Image 1 (spheres, rainbow, N blue to C red):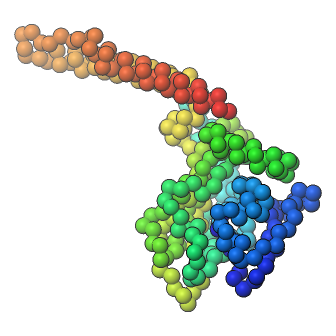
Image 2: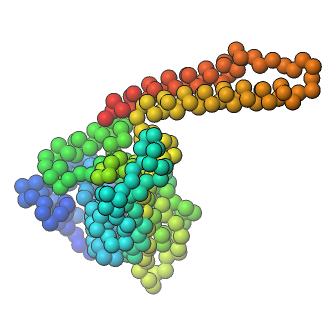
Image 3: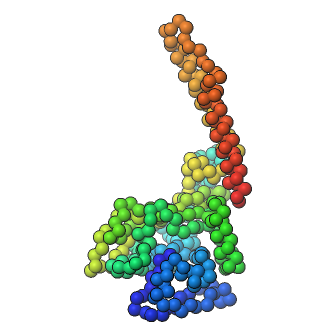
Length: 321
């Protein structure tokens, strides 16, 4: 993550502080380093805390935002903001794998616009890459797909770092990558609109599973050295509908097997109806016959192969849990 360090101070005391309630026994010792050490960007965190991963309770990169101060805590943003539409448990409607209750959920929803100020010196030239200038389609950070309690967060801190690193390396969906993208990037400017989009699966009336996350930059402006730049942080937190969940492979193996089988059957029936209709209206004395063998080879067999391939991949996917 980018470092925001004052250039006028030779030595800094850096602390990793996650909460006012951080147990003293788990807090790392302060580390005095100079500006030259901070410049060693790639190896800084390993040098400072002997680890290559930081586990944070707040939203990275975004700071100095209206009503939130220096840090935006996830639960404070999505569970206590008065502008979010938070549903009572009894009013929440989930989307089932077989959508008997409909294809659109009724669940918590947020669409927030926060006025934020850059913590970085936007007008200042630096050899380091600012967070809004990184490569498109890059993973900014990861978010656990399920909520983490404060007890889980504060217990066995070093073990957690290893645990979450293993989830990322294991290529499971227990950790959701936050994908960065930029619309009409201006390397000499700054984004005036930053969208943080979070899409989740309402598994039960009381449980959510984060499925997709992204940060999108837009509306770039040229730097005005006479003004300190601000940007609007648009936070969208929404539940996914049935079709989006299907495309994101959020249902069990039997649902996808059933879907492919039904698709094969309906495809075959459609071909037979089309052939029958043309046979009836044909003016030819001997219209062509329907070649079932070739039809099955072209239509049915690929569906069987795809179903089998999907089955193997889904088995591997769900075993990863």
